[in-house]
View 1 (cartoon, rainbow, N blue to C red):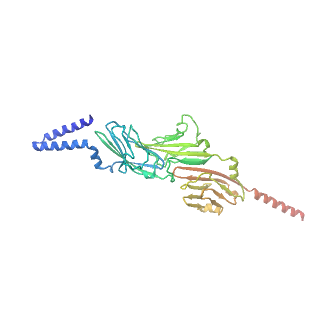
View 2 (view 1 turned 90 degrees about the vertical axis):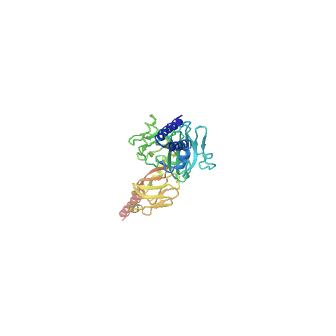
View 3 (view 1 turned 135 degrees about the vertical axis):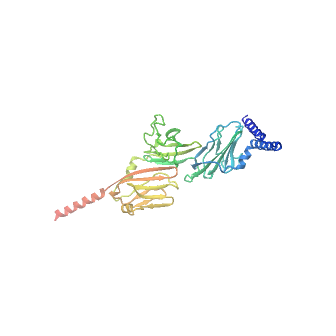
Length: 404
């Protein structure tokens, strides 16, 4: 009905425009020619649009990581008169026709090219497209075309996909020990239009609204359930979530949801926490002068992990990719000269021939694109052996003195 009304209105205006001309023959020819053009446009509107191309469409920039799920919003509710088509790098990958039962994804639309392998999902109500378990090969330009009887809308989404440590799954695991701090990274710079929500086992535990000054953690989101008891911290610039003093009850699946007007991103993190017996911790951290200690991260090291060791705030060792460095600054070299050993495969740090001046806080930070783990080791070195030797030598000297 809207289609007929719009076409009829245009033809009426065209009639009065041509009727004002004096030359009757020219008037009739012009009226017929313009009428044909208008009718052709309305009946073959899709062809006109496709001939113009979609390369100049306004694009939203979307940055995601391997394994994410992304929903591209249409911003409309479909009706029987509309057609919705999705393109990836100018190849049609999904569509909804006027009949909602006719939904075409991947193989059917793409004439046998199975690029997305059942990873596409269309919302019947809105036509929004979800791409699950994103891969680096999914980077490129996605285009939306909405065609109705009265209007056509074109929209673009430019995708960049960051590699997630070479892991092509929708879930990456963080392995930590009790007492560690774990940072779950968003790897985005938040803007005012975005909302960021964190879930633990499907319960909201933290969120940032469009107003950066409003962040909620644990009690506010979880309606009084104080599972984390002030151990959650939100970065207002990125939305990254830090869990401090982690315990084995914090093990489980964490979900991140980034929501904007035009798209939403879902990311999953699996966190595994195991406790270290107190006796083992004391054995590692209480040493005597002259002994050696090995500070073991006790976690799985991924190939792209970066590891840095600090002693009382001073960088003393690091692993980046295939490269290991020990004591790259003068302050470190003077204190530990040739007494540090770094295991490249595990990131363990060994300190040999320990001194009392080696007592203090050793901190290891393990960082990759998905998460960071911060481990603290408080090492206490006593001079017991040297004190005993000193008193024994003093005792012998006194015996020699009195025996003369």
